[in-house]
Image (cartoon, rainbow, N blue to C red; front, side):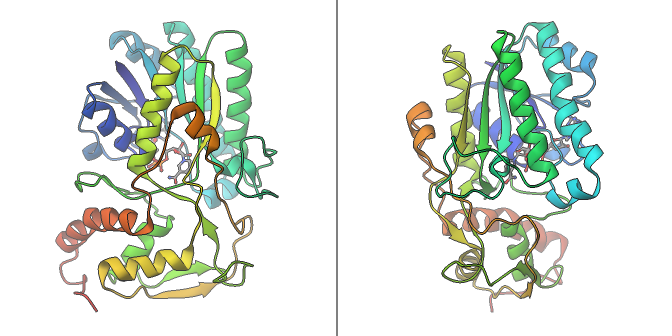
Length: 335
Ligand SMILES: NC(=O)c1ccc[n+]([C@@H]2O[C@H](COP(=O)([O-])OP(=O)(O)OC[C@H]3O[C@@H](n4cnc5c(N)ncnc54)[C@H](O)[C@@H]3O)[C@@H](O)[C@H]2O)c1
């Protein structure tokens, strides 16, 4: 299959390109490189373009005879969305409108869309099933929720055939260390905890240690990025087999607290994680844990790399040599 991967120079998109290529599919990346990295595109062509450019996207779809599209491009930093909502609506919603117009013109119907557990907001019940009300509490979650509504509307007319995958917390790196998480700015826990352990950038912030959880820190459902990639392949195959459009969670069903992640970083790296306790951030739910039954049923998906130690070992194997190379004087040895 030839798959257009929009946002394929970014963290998750690049790992999906690797997985597609490893099983013999051809990923064609379209990315404006606003947040992604040219060096992360290794398994097929890179078309440097903005997804909001309908003509450019249509051109790629026809020129490369694309069979299906995967869409990862979005603004993802929650705080940024609160400060600049219009940019988020423009890119996260406007980007999908343009993509759907291009797909319609080119006659390409299958689409795998990156949604998020942020569509559920602060849910009442755990684990969170797909039937939980979708009441997002921030701009980021609202843009993803609205896109899901739009996909429902467009697919009803038979113009689209989609899977909306609601990821919980993606983390880790490819086990061979070839690619990993390189957001800039980086707001995600695992790379920031590793960075703090490596003595780069000062102590990290732990936001809130007075939640009603066993150790007082928030609990999240961390899914290894290569498990996520596997689920995408299964979702794509399900769409290509003619099954109806669907939305489903991608998580592990188990929660790991922020403090447990810091402990795992210390175990794996042998270094302490300097951190300061900061006030809770508004909109941070106490616990987000996925109900995994639908993913098991529809995709026969079962994560197998998503333990804290495996996630952190792979992330560390990716980062440590790069930091050592770039920051030879600042990377300390084991404590
Ligand atoms: N990282 C997570 O834990 C997580 C969790 C839930 C959902 N998601 C979703 O997964 C997707 C990918 O996340 P990520 O962590 O890989 O983000 P990322 O920022 O690493 O990747 C996004 C990519 O999209 C590109 N892009 C952005 N706007 C574009 C545009 N207008 N045209 C073309 N390219 C554009 C960026 O340059 C970047 O390469 C996002 O849609 C995000 O909302 C991520």
